[in-house]
Length: 212
Image (cartoon, rainbow, N blue to C red; front, side):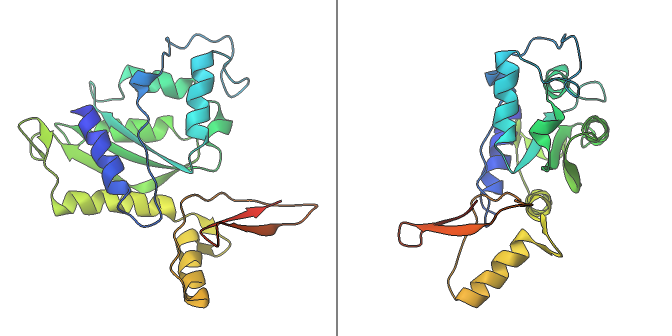
């Protein structure tokens, strides 16, 4: 059921305006049990698959962890992958949590939130799915309440602050000023101590970037 749930999260997230989500499956990474001589907080792991994993997550603006509950906690494969992550890979990112178990994933989401305290900013909305009531014949049967619960997680991830406003607020304001509909596919905070920022517009206004 795990991959189906993760695919559903991606599909629903992509329905939210301004979001472009994709699936990252731990099964695609060959990560042995962590046995590095020093923790990633001191030195980033050099194992090629660990480097690739950190680069994949590092390229995202936000990350949603989707996990089952094993013995009231996090699956070993997920905890092992987290152990390989250097803090820099998640710097400045917002993190969302989705879990599933017979007890609405209460324990695993609490443990996962604790494990992620040194990474980014884990948003408060989270989604816990119940294997007894939210699934039929082994497949997730999302209700409107469940869909709204996931949307709340995604919207919280979008609410990255830009001064006193959020990215979504700034986009709404620019649409009002310019009079044209716009969609943010990707954003990143940029600060400059010495230098300047300028805009770059390409393909007749279809693509725009701020460049240094």
